[in-house]
Every structure is written in structure tokens, then in C-alpha cells.
Length: 383
Image (cartoon, rainbow, N blue to C red):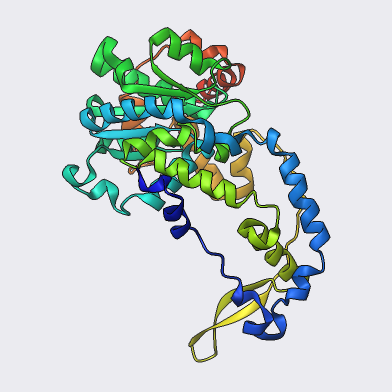
């Protein structure tokens, strides 16, 4: 029997919440007493009951218990990726990226990618949660796309940033591999809605589904996070078993035995006592640094945003002289070596313009993405 199925082993691995350093017995007058905690016990019990009543609407809480079928398939696909590919790249933003990053940092070697192939036992992992072109270009400097598997993740199936990444990578794969490009892409998306599922079906991509009612950071324990974890050699069955055990512990209605409730209670009561403390490093008159504890207060600020055309920005940040130079630069596209001898736009955008590329129609069926491309095309060729 696997150790994680043994109740005694589970108990031996249980997290322990130590609140001693928040208690008055340890830290003095600014600490909490049991009376501070117990005085609102009726409210805590009511809050626990409310959480239990809302569970049916928290689909993500069921993930540790209902992923057995898809886990078997994930393990099969992951084993193939581990044996045949040198790099595994996640294309996604928000929770689709933060979940895989968190699990990898928590459970894998802190220098996983720098380990030898023999020690890793699988491909290097890259999580690309930014569409910055320099970042994407740098990725291509360190991977061989012919030996790379890309996992594109978007619950909605139409996230502009992620679909832009897919469009970019698809073009490169098609140029390198022709019709075999689809063997290098795994899609993780909604089973019915969005453009990604349409593309996945049309091109025959390996596809996994994000369950209904699950999204963002709460999706780590479904294919969104489990695929990358399995590819990196993490035991995802043990991961889910641990999550199921934590779900059991955090479903305990008695707040005294529930570490999640107790942590929240202690933080709340400490805030009420004014224990909002941060540490600042200051320098005295002789240049010596020292640390002081400084109380702070949270404020919710109201901010008004205005939209301006990009051409307005220089007016607000440049003085008259630099604004004049900027105007010349823009009118000549920087293509004046006598004025701009160090301009990198000259070669990159003028003498060697990028090739034309026709965006596939299926990508443009998403209204938001199509609008983004239309706007971007207005500025092609400009700095």
C-alpha cells in the first residue's frame, strides 16, 4: 500500500499551526488571550456552518476527490512527454501559470531546470505567463521546438494573451514540423465553450478539460496544474491525497481543531488590537542602519482612470526639447543614422521588415482577440 493511503502516515505528516507567538503569554500586552479568541465563538461557529452550506457551490473543493479518471490519462501522457521531449512549456496567465509555478517550487528541486537530464528524469519546465516579445524570443534561444511540448491553458478558450502565444508558437511549429506540429501541443480548456476547444478538435490536439465551476488559482488540482506536475515527476496521486486530507482537516466544524479557521481568527483578533506591524530599515546620522517596527493601516483607495491614445503619453512625460526629438524620430521611423546613430529600429524595422503573416480565421472568431489584432495592426512598423 502506498504510504499516502495509510492514515497513520497521513497523521504523521500533518501540518501543525503554532500560534504561541501571537499569544500574550509569549509576547506580552500586545498578544492575544484565549478570552480574546473565545469571546466571539458564536460568530466563528456560524461562519463554519456557512462554509459547509456553501460547499456545493465551491466545485474546486471536490477536486481532490474526483480526479481519479483523468489522473490515469494524465500519467500516460506525462510519461510520453518525459521520455520523448527535452522541454515542457506552459502557455497561460493568472492561475493557469501561478498554480504550476507554486507546486513546482514547493515540491521539486529548487534548481530543477539546471539538473542533468538523468537527475531530472524528464524535460525542463518553463511557464510563460507574459506575452512580452523579448521574453518569448529568449525562450526560443534556450529550447529546441522540435523537442518541446507546449501546454496551452485557458479556461475560457479565448484569453487574448494565451491565444496570442499559441498563434506565435503554432506558426513556428508549422514552419519546423509541417503537419506534425500538432503532436507538440496539449490543450487544456473548457469542454464546450471558447475557441481553443474548436481549434483543438479541428487540429486533433491532445486535450484535457477544466471542470465546470473551477477556474483561476483554484484549478491547480485539475489538469491545469496536474499535467505540468506529472511531467516534472511529481506524484500527482499523492498530491491529491494530501489535498483530500487537508480538506478533511479544514472541514472540521470546531474552529479550535481547524487550523484554517484558527489562523483566520488569530489574524482578525490581532488586527482589532491594532497589531498591524511592519519593519522598516532606517539610517542614523552616522550612517548606521537599524530596524524599527512601524504600525500601518490598510486603506482602500479610489482611483479614476482615463484612456488616452498612446500619442498623448509623450506630452505628459517629456520636456520641449525631448518632445521635439521624439517628433522627428517618429516622423522618420528612426531611420536617420545622422540623428540616431544607435537606433536599433533602423535594421530591425526598416531594412529587414517582418514577413507578412495571415492569421487563421478560427482565431479571429473571438471578438476580443480580433479587436486586439485590429488595433495592433495600426502600429506595425512603428517604434
